[in-house]
Amino acid sequence: MKKITSILMLFCLMTLSVQTVFAQEDSSSTDGEETVDSGAVANDTVAEATTEPEATTEPEEKAEPTGLQVLKNKFIEGGPGFMSLPLICLILGLAIAIERIISLFWMSINTDKFVAQINDEVSAGNIEGAKEICRNTRGPVASIFYQGLDRSDQGSIDVVEKSVVSYGSVQMGQLEKGLVWLSLFIALAPMLGFMGTVIGMIEAFDAIKAAGDISPGVVADGISVALLTTVAGLIVAIILQVFYNFITSKIDGIVNRMEDASISLVDILVKNKIVKA
Image: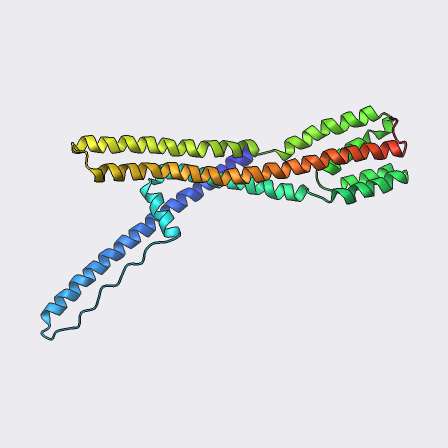
């Protein structure tokens, strides 16, 4: 919980810094426009004072904003207060997803090679050597093998199977750690977007009531700004859902290898008469 809290505080600060940068860029662009306007007025005054005609230059076409500039403009149009909430969900969800992906790839091993090493050690009667291999190998498969080998001295296959099944449940919980938070952000981002849309619609209707006139311009602008939060929430949910499905598919693959390896462990112990069937 402390880890989640620290991550939350960190990314909240990052979001506030992003908003500050956007505000500074807007203020700098406004100052630049004012400077250009004042310079244009001064140039016009000098042109009027001179008697010789000067060649007129065609006005330069303004470049259309693209990429990050468009996102920044939409972020500001939707309101930094409400647009920040889906952004925070995106940042925290991506942090959890990336951490899970790295952990799952780190846990993945060559199961066939590992089972072959354990089989060689058990066939040679070196149970301690097999346990040492398990201790030096990362991942849930090695942990399950260690628990099964550690109970093999009791001579009963039932004890080994119960130990493997019980510790497999523990490993399953560790594999799914953090997914509940990721699913929370997937569900929360669209709801926060809808909340911003509803509040934006209320403000739009209040503006219509204050103006006393239903003009298409006022209604269109208010609805456009209000819907931006919904779009942001849906985009965040889609991105996080892709990561969630990838992580769950990776976990399913690891679990399948765990089950296959557990069966192989029992077969190895029975074949070498370490436990009784």
